[in-house]
Length: 439
Ligand code: DGY
Picture 1 (cartoon, rainbow, N blue to C red):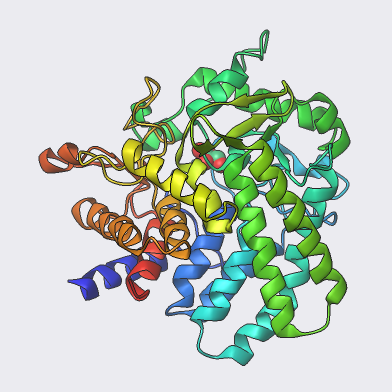
Picture 2 (tube, rainbow, N blue to C red):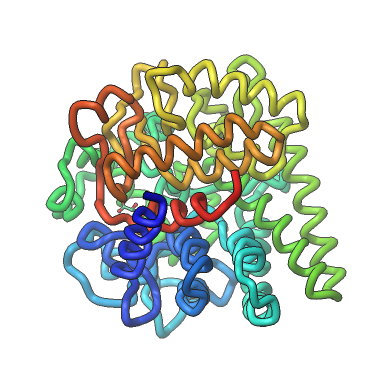
């Protein structure tokens, strides 16, 4: 049974790998290379095809901008099955964008640091993996440097995102409060492509796309200049998931530089970033009443007081102390861990904004489960971690390698509870990793 599942997962991954050496997240809906998708995919490939794992990371880093920025999509090929494509994003407006790759001017949660460390631990040939890490580690360091230097205007150690697509949790109800502040935005003429692949009830609305496009138009009007974005973007959010990935990746880079040897200055810089980031994270992004890490709206200087799966990601980056971790995990179990739900819904199931079918407004996502699984384990909550792992395996076994899954257990008894794209790469990649890992 486990062998079958592993084989099916490998088939999905192999099927999505492209001749140019990167993987698409899934056919039709996402026909290019996505940043954090590639990171998770590389972890899966590391278990059985290290050449592909290396290629996944390398093709993404080949499109890094000269200022260190790593884009969220690399348009390696032409495709008319996706909107908005390269001709909308126009990365060539920025003087830092590469000449030989078309990309977006947005980024995604910075996973590559801990991806390199996972690759190091998984792959048996340490000389080979270390040679690869040595070749690319500075590129990841430069990306972090860019984030701290250009996206942390108050020097708090908490970097902002300027677009919901940078959060990874694209249409989270969190952003509704930001959209309410954006009045008088134009109505754009555009043709959605996503809703020709997936039922519209599982995707963001057209009005949401208006906001998404508007934010990009503001950045484009200033050639993706960071200082102008800081000054003008109505969407400047300190996101707990994005910052947790950065902190985890900082620590991974420290560990890897220590294995490589030398580089004391970079190690000290990374340590200083993490000390400040963790302190501010706990001081500013922890809501004592909600007992959860939350988002902060830097533009409007106010917390966004909602609990989502992103609220639990700081466990993965060792942000809370043991007492706070316990408080968060108790909260996770009372709200998200009720018997009728699979762990871990992407948004608070008690909220009237919870929608178990719609993308990031409720469904379970495999990458967040993987992050929560590792977070729980690192604080010694092994039984709970095993529950997350088993439920993740169950969701995929029952439905297939979907992009996201209904959190309500009853749905899976009566029909399919898998939504969005099928044969989705990171669902397969992270399942491989979970199956290969000890409990
Ligand atoms: C989409 O098009 O929905 C993507 O997630 C954007 O990154």
